[in-house]
Image (cartoon, rainbow, N blue to C red; front, side, top):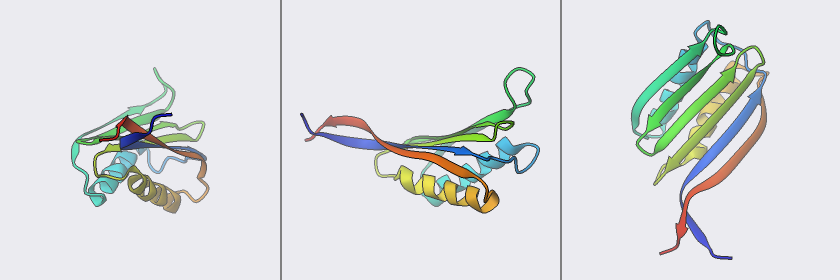
Length: 129
């Protein structure tokens, strides 16, 4: 089998037990993600959140911070307590550091939150040079 090098990585986290921290919890999550991006010294290109009230989509939110090295996003089904987070970076940034900061902040605010899985997947695979 050929050996490949990776130029990036994607970290996926799935939680249960998510409890909204305020009525507009998507904005709260977006701020948490933006702060983590800043702490990791990754350039935030654009941020956006959509709060879903249940009228068209299930209650919850989708939040994304577009990075010059990819993205960090969170998707939540509030009524079910489900939260999915993904951190994808390429180049010199470490998505595990970004995921660790967000995870720590979430656990500080929601001690009953339960991490069901965390996966690390290398991305931008290519032949070594």
